[in-house]
Length: 385
Image (tube, rainbow, N blue to C red; front, side, top):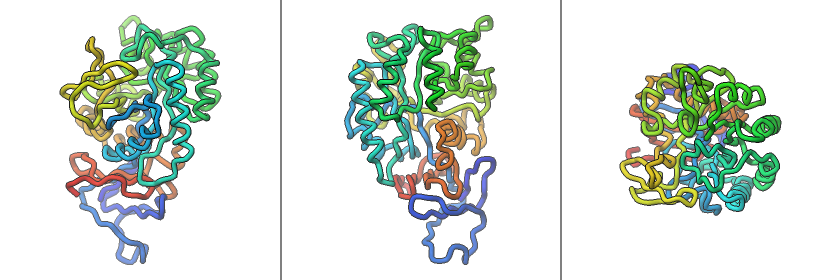
């Protein structure tokens, strides 16, 4: 088995687990090493990645975070390991304040009571909207979009019991810089998205504490040679890291490759931005109270606007490899390591190392998921295993 480490690939690698934790990793295991510990043998070409961390998912497998029920998190916890995801941020959508509050309250209850290993771990919330620019709303319901409101954000965070980790907002809108500074000062990630900010406004936001861009290329002012906009800032401002949906629909393969080559793998987060229909058949589904049609792996509103994705995290990994020829350790960073570091949990997640959570994904040579382990428990096994 090959271990995909931070800066290398270890051939003939081994990993030993105790309960929910990695206790040892190494190469060329000898017969008398670790006596008495049961062993599970794998093919030489099997690839062991750190568990994937999806910091932007609205749902999948028939549920949506905005449903506001415990079933949402139970379903995601059980289903996400099939795509290699061992931890995630539940992502809201622009909606009535009461609906957002209900989703946050329900998720907070689940977050604090989750104890079971063997399921994907809820790391908290990604609050996407309602503080966005209507000009770049994408599939966010226009009637619920509001200006940046620091008091309302504080209320949302109280209802979430402090579990909001990322906030997508438009810094150029009224109150944007105050919101940026407060979010950053309280240890939450200010993420610029659904924004029409100019390059100058982006620099000002970064100076105030912004450090993240939501789904690069989508829902933002694009690059122009006289006004580089949000995309130009992503390319050139070192403090910024960007999410990207590598599904070939939200961003073309050359656009994904451009982001990889300009910002480098350390500045990219692979995300799904997935919605309820992921893992289900083509048909009509709901996203934030809007009808979404899914056909041929594409989810759209009635007017043709892309409405989230139905791609899986392992699908993003395969596409990123195909689009960029990224090295395996680079893929591991973009799907786990960068996320863990940004969220401040790299002491326990994001890489394969002793004393970290035993979150592991075993992929075959085609980068298909064969097994997923969540905190030391087998959470998914493909039928081919």
